[in-house]
Image (cartoon, rainbow, N blue to C red):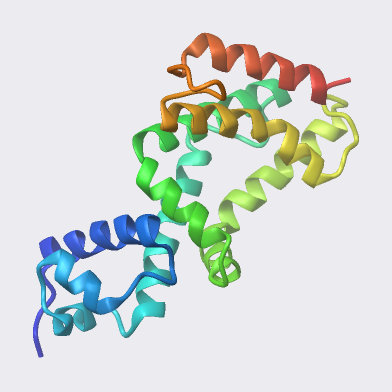
Length: 196
């Protein structure tokens, strides 16, 4: 049996992420991945049992890194404004540092792999966020709204700004650079919308 080469495995993961973003799940294949990674197809099967195993493992790894970053320096006992600000900082930092991984996660989370990836990646984050929201409700720092509306209002503006940053331009095609001032402006509007 051949042994694992962590350098090759890292190259395979990076190429897989790039290909999933570029070609989508439908255009992604093990033969193509082997060719683009500079390894034999047999080498891929040292690391993964099949295409589904590869996609699930890479997606889970990205999800765990993402959600771990989301709770960095975050506590469910923070005030609503302080905790949401920390969430924005953490999300923005991860997205700006890892645009390909975020694009890959986005693609996979809108696919048939979604449920298994979320189940593997979300547990600790989900618990922390649920307690954070409950605490904000109890302290009357947050308007009583559904979780879907909360998420849309709380994070939608941030993700729109990050998309503009990633594309390098705004709606009118003018160059766009995400600044702290723009983030602060959007954040303050979100706080006004969500708090009594």
